[in-house]
Image (cartoon, rainbow, N blue to C red; front, side, top):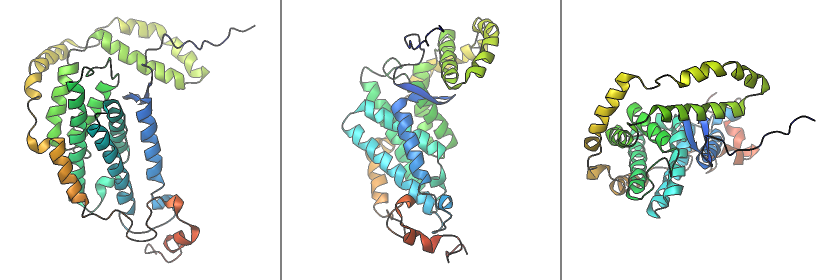
Length: 299
């Protein structure tokens, strides 16, 4: 008889309740699931997928509505000091706004800027809450480094997270992770390889086995170059300066108040058609005036 399949997960490198969205995005399984569900909702708000034209920016504002809802959920969890729940929502929000950036292209630039700042302030509030607790580490939050990297990248690009928060996030990341060792780097790579292997078919697994000897040799190499190690030491010395006191205008309570005040004057429902962003809920009769070839503005 053939050997029974090995279902033993005790040797897994990947922390329980965690997974990858892609090779560079390690996150909680809950965060990934929430992000994917929200991305699916965004597609249901895109007129192009339904051969429709409603008006310019319909999709942008439909996605904006999803961003606002995720931010509201995050605000609730921050107020309740539900750090675990806030962490999951923040992961999902950062992944969602990275994958679906159409909302940043709407015709209300001030709303985009207010939302960028609210995202940065909410992320900072989560990290500050964790820092005040005893759980500000990858031991309690295995995907913490990945989330911080996401926030730093978003600030650098300045599209979905206000650039003013970049130095603060980088300071936190450097303080926590500048001293990563070769063993840490090897562990990270092994987690990636384990995840990829779980997606591969038998043929891919056979090909991977051919590379085992080469990988073993690589494991003995100095993964972190000497110059990078020296730079890490310098960055570690500057970490405290980078994580200086946060100005009042960047604190969550102040930013959230400004954000909500601006949103109060913004439309919350479509300007044309039924008052629903989700086009899957529109009836055939409601869709008809906006379908290509049926008298829509597109024609």
